[in-house]
Image (cartoon, rainbow, N blue to C red; front, top):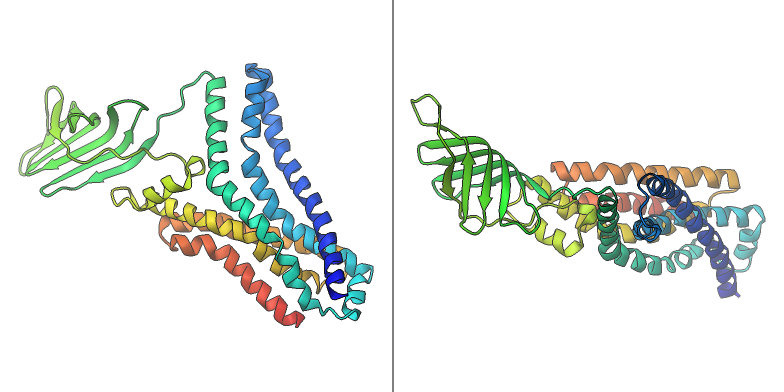
Length: 348
């Protein structure tokens, strides 16, 4: 009898969950569809090209929908059963309220597995296809990847470039805001090039500064040896697969902000798939305490707004170094896990 009653609750939650996933998918796809149709009318690409670009966003949208629909489904399902006195009947049938929380949460382990694979593989590839497709439609070359604030300090020297631009398939990178210090000489230039085959930097129209002497403009370009390797250029994290981000996070030659951003994104792609289970625990405990549907709708908004506030704040703190990347990625889940524990204690 208790197992039958639990199955009834799961069936109700499943119906609401399917509706919630469809709702959140529709809300996200509507905005993307409007921009796709506008570009289709303006630039007249092949219909298959526009459709392919549009569908490339599906993995990212699906992940968000699978997560956001969890509190929506559980809170509204339990509120409906509460208002119809079905939960009272279940409790009278020998199933205490707290005993319902774990059975509600366990099926969302499957959702966690789906979102994990999506977040680490298909969503980044889809975002890269989206941008590359529309650059082709606009008849534009995608901007070459770039690295900001490059620094290399071998013994007795210092190399700095404000920006390193790496055109795909080229042996030369473009340098902007260049400074080279070797011994007593400091060379500065607005632009330069990095030849990866000869392992040299060439500074265009540089100025040279020496101790006790005024800066002087040098005639012609100046080439200096540069023994560091040219690392893969930084691509937006949302378009980068997890193995590449792990390598980026472990590269001591990259700026700290880039390494921390990569480490945070790797951790987030593990933490976010756990969110459906955490949501299910917290929403299950809260839903069993609510008494009407109006309160359930309000709780859904509080859930999503509270989580979104934490979820959008943490990346900036992690990138700035104010919070460790792993801790920042897991903070939203930890906050809602504490909430789930407090609600379970109250429900007890």
